[in-house]
Length: 272
Image 1: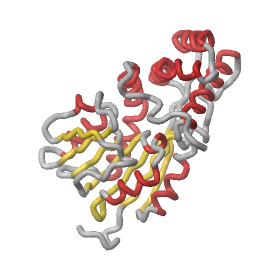
Image 2: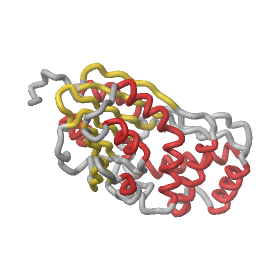
Image 3: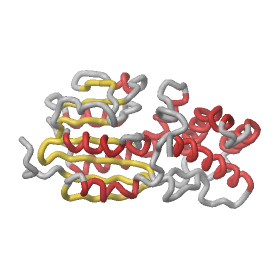
Image 4: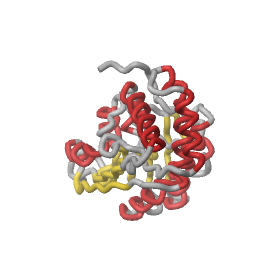
């Protein structure tokens, strides 16, 4: 099916983007950093943070790799990533689905909540694998909204029903932009098919937290005009929902974030 519109739905140039990045960091950084620890990110590593968005993951990597390491942070819009630029960190505008890979190779490549939104995600995944050094690690963390589609899993009243209906409208907007709403569950298989070894995966999603409410309010405000224009919600419904979020009466969840990782084999025929 053709996409109704082009481009990323959640534009980094909008004011709500910074609020969303902060909320996503509060929700998912601990899980991401746990994976980095397990993978053994160490001093001197060369790391590529794909679709960096906010600066928190880049800052963690910069601290871990030390002065002998290198961190490259890329995004299609570096409006917010630019604050991470410091000694040892390079910020580069880059479209992972369409552009050639940046100069590597890399010991670690990480992308969180990126490929699910990239229409050319198959090409993007090939780019990431090609940019790894032999023995290098790829960690992809992506949402699977189709696996758990409700923002209020405990749909016990009209406020929760409204929240879930608006979430369904948001998912429809994503689908029209080419997002793969079942991408997360495919990651282990896709990493193996891409030639990676030692593939593992797990999943994490909060069921309720203050950051979930902050993220929901910022997301709805960011896409409200598109929801209304598409006939997926009315202004009155959106205002009512935002009031419910602000009142703290909703147990708001996120889509499961599935983390999958694997290693490029040393003997895959590429140069060290």
